[in-house]
Length: 412
Image (cartoon, rainbow, N blue to C red; front, side, top):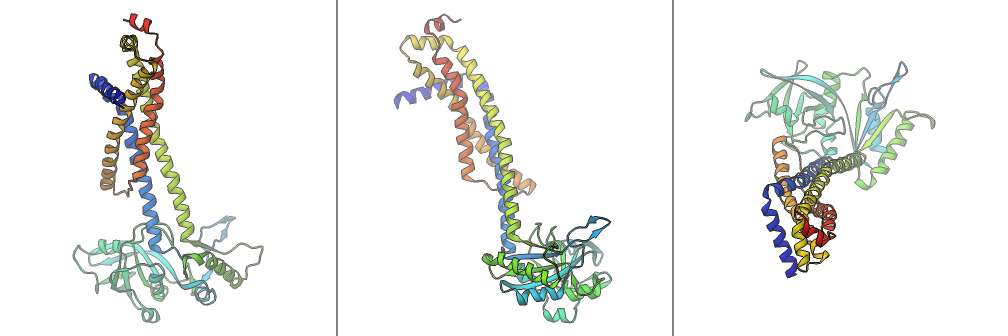
């Protein structure tokens, strides 16, 4: 133990004698460790954010979209055909035992006006059950109810982004009147912020206005075919039964739409578990990719350490010869140079850890990018730096230990 401490002390002394060279040698490892922590933290942050957003929507939620049509030999996108009806939504709620409730809707982009302010946003006509299915709390006010649906009331609920852009900060939107397609609507509520995420229409969830479905169909959006909807929202009784609920919906809709067994569905069903799994897989691939790219700089740093240690062996050939002459064994020489290599990589690794954590926080604050600094990632990055020091220090250390003492003493 005392011998190891002496070797460590000697290694630090040698590195201090060549401060600039030591600093430049450590730079590669420092950049490598810092890059690994920053890149992986960004990737993991994105994964965590997506997971939290999807969990906030509720993992027992299903989306049923209208299917596709074929025109001129080309298939149009999902939702371009009129294949789902209000009766379909009611039938799903009534006949599928694993479905707790349903909602339905249609949407259209419109200009909204309040005073001298205007904003282009999505106007979504939905039913009162929509808020419950989406597990979406109110920030202010209330959501519309069945009575508003029955009388096609001109009331609306604003997404938080719409409220921010239509109203001056500090101004209370509740009770105010906005104009949509020359129709006045009274604001009765504001949804809590949700952010942008795919699923159920995608885009920025906060950049939309909700109105009763009947109001949308009769006064705003209209319908070429009354009673047809673009999307049905369904909530399974729990997350464990979502697969059964999806199968029940599929079977029921194929029966109602008279689809033969050899014909494709004229609708598309998506559930948040599928979306979550897909996003999780994409996030994992992104994290590994970013980590792998950053790890290259660590390897480059290791090559730099090996080159400098080889130069050091050449410069200190006579010193090695003297050590051997006074009784130092090959093992002692090898350990000496190996410790110097590891000390270089460890110091560079510690500095890299600090830089990585700081740069990650800076990126988070400046770019408003979600980050997640995992202690495990920090530990792995530092361990990798130590391994780099050992691996790339072995060859120079081995070369130094095998020098011929007589030839080393003659070296000028």
